[in-house]
Image (cartoon, rainbow, N blue to C red):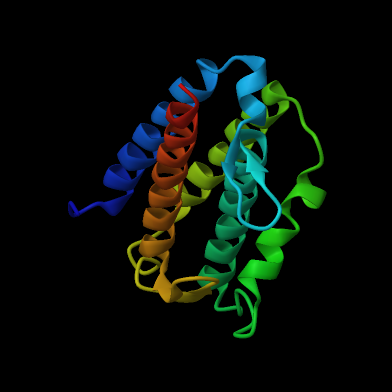
Length: 161
């Protein structure tokens, strides 16, 4: 990372979001219902985008708590159970509503990033799958998570072609 991690993280988050939005904007309405993951309760593109938004919102809350020295999640948090409830929590938003929600959540993520000080970067919080990570690693996780699921969607769509 450069001496100012904010700049590099802003660039990474912009790049991963641009890739996701380019993909989403190319979808036909029926493609939003393509199954991306079929283990357990199947996740469609719609479900996965809701999950990405919910996950980023949650990590932003965890970053805020980490800054304040507050416990982010309990050590016994059950990520599998949380993910299993994603469809119920997000409901059935339209593609436009999902894209709008992504934009709102990202704006808040970047707003928080902009307020971080040099002392904040090494603060540590508990992430549900990565364990104890720094604030910087939270932002890297948001970026990587978005890239991973963008690739998952592309793979699912390619399998239909």
